[in-house]
Amino acid sequence: DAGITQSPRHKVTETGTPVTLRCHQTENHRYMYWYRQDPGHGLRLIHYSYGVKDTDKGEVSDGYSVSRSKTEDFLLTLESATSSQTSVYFCAGGGLYNSPLHFGNGTRLTVT
Amino acid sequence: GESVGLHLPTLSVQEGDNSIINCAYSNSASDYFIWYKQESGKGPQFIIDIRSNMDKRQGQRVTVLLNKTVKHLSLQIAATQPGDSAVYFCAEPIIQGAQKLVFGQGTRLTINP
Image 1: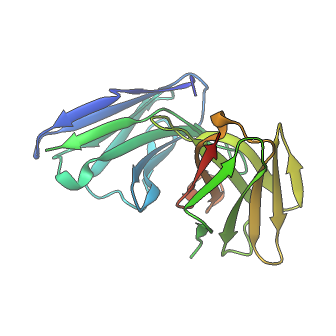
Image 2: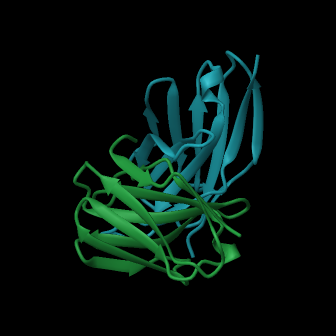
């Protein structure tokens, strides 16, 4: 979805280093989400935002934090990356209940 | 709790045939379902959705059927093409107000020439 842009698309980092993934949207979505996708687990929600400066945890939030200082941008931070955080991360945006989310093309993160 | 599951992890069909991908859900109160397609190296792409007040909804070459009695939905793809090769997910939101989606594991659809 061209309305959701993630950067970087690929990143390799070392254990213990901080990492920030960026999500930028041009669709004026109120809600934004970070998911991770792993073999055998599918897509799992990390954190989401329901407005500027309003965020909440998902099912796999440990080790992650998020920030949303403006509608367009939603940042995911790994304060101290671990090998278990090697994954593909997807950002999504959407509106209210009973409407689909729209996803970016993901960031592949490898923690060595 | 809520869960969304897919019956088969893989499905192979001949080009031009119809494909049917199934999904079961556990929460009888679920009132909205979404199908996504994910191609290699890309994010999930919205295909079609359906609300619980409907039994069937059609899009371009795709149809979603909802059977609330047995808590089952299916995605039918007509006249499959090579470009239909992808992983297909069903998903449902688990709370109102924020669209927190729960995804099934996915079915990988392979189109044979």
